[in-house]
View 1 (cartoon, chains in turn blue, red):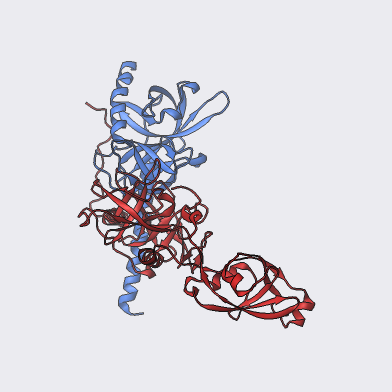
View 2 (tube, helix red, strand yellow):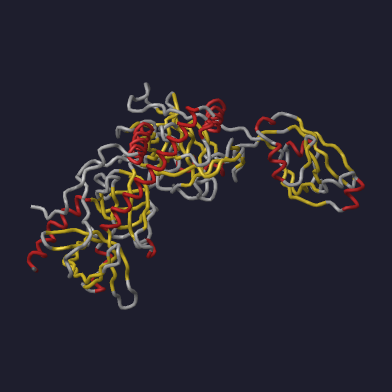
Amino acid sequence: MTAAAIIGAVEVRRSHVALTNDLEQLSDRLRRSTVRIHTRGERLDGVGAGVLWTHGPESLVVTNAHVVPPGRGNEAVVEDHRGRMSAAHVVARHRDHDLALLRLADSADWPEPIALADDRPLRVGELVAAVGHPFGVAGALSLGIVHAVPNDHHTWIRADVRLSPGNSGGPLAALDGTVLGINAMIVRGLGIAVPARLVRAFVAHAAESVDADS
Amino acid sequence: MLPSSAPPERANKNPSTLRGLSDDLTAAVERASHGVVAIHARPRIPASGIYWNDGIVLAASHTVRRDEDVPITLHDGSRVRANLVGRDGGTDIAVLRLTETPVPTAISVAARARDDALRVGALVLAIGRPGSEGVTAGLGIVSAVGGRWRTWSGGEIDRFVRLDLSVYDGFSGGPLVDVDGSVLGMNCSALARGAPLTIPNATLDRVVNALLTRGHVARAYLGVAMQPVRLTRSLAEQLQLADAPHGVLVVMVESDSPADTAGLLVGDIIVSAGGSPVADPQDMAELLGAERVGATIELSVIRGGERRSVSVTVGERPTNDRSRRGRGRDS
């Protein structure tokens, strides 16, 4: 092996280590802003994901409406990545956009909230990461790509990323950690996420009821 | 005023390697997408196709359910028409020709990767265009690469290439590309019970040439149905076959077929063909590649407890409409 080849091999290994480090940082960041949501049902208890959000002094959680269905009442328990729990109350649901907003009873000292991505065009093939609790596994990371860009017929994000029950309500994020959408369902193997644009509009509207409540 | 979370933190100033990979993947999709078309030749969801060269578009045969005036959507969303030139159900390849000349500028020939780029572990993208709404992509790796193989419907594929990625609408007929966006083959989910496979460029070239020059892919044909048999020890010893006491029993001979003309009879046991031992019908199939059409092959058969030699002139399989459509998942 020549010296140049050895240096080349070391550089290649270094870049692979950097790649893994990038992923680790990304998953750490997303995990801090992703919570578990426990609901009580008559026959079956539910567990889903949600993302932390702040509105003035309030600590909120955004999730899918189907994670906190009306049939399970409006009370839930939210758990952060360190295992800290708080009671939470559903303040708004949007059935068509499959979004719900919860207010945490205990508003102090939650980890950092998510940052929603700007409204920018997505590119097919760009790497995306999802964090959630597939089949109850806490804070699991999935890596994938944007499968197709939203259009007039498909306004939600379609991602080639492995999602399972328990990912619902969790973030689908770009590599910079900003959230592109809220994972909502799996259709023909593709992960479908409510885009940040709809999340922003929903929270803007729903936060009025938070203000009215407090 | 929107209730806002923390201001979005901007990305790392220095492009990370993960970012670099993401940029490479989007560039590969963009580069490949100009050669990927949508083919509207079945109900509901359209399928994908690859622009190959000179007005020729390739598609997965099982997704093409009409032969004429097939609408094609190009990269820029414009529509053109194409007619079927031919199809080979065995390899699930259909060849269409655009009716418009010259070829629209919105379409370009996909760059092709070198054949040795197909390696286990290679990061690959499956590109599709399942309609007029733009290109789609799936990410995965090449999970297995093997040698020449024969599909359930008798087609010969130069290399077995299995993928570890998800099959989605528009997968079949779309290209598999490397991280440079160069084409490694055409994806198909109908050749192995819905498993994602790629038909390598070498097979595409071979089948396209056959379909353009002859309208079909020649396939060697004897006209017999066979099943494997094991010889008794005494018979095998008597006929000096103790080392390989196997053969295939002829259970049906098609009238006027090459086997019929050569005098092969039901009840004959073929123990070797062209000097190679034969233990099951698959051995016979492997000895009967398309290049054997017209050639004479010596069969060693057991008839009435004795070995004798039968010369067969290999024929060409009559075209079979049943093979027009593949089985398997319709994607």
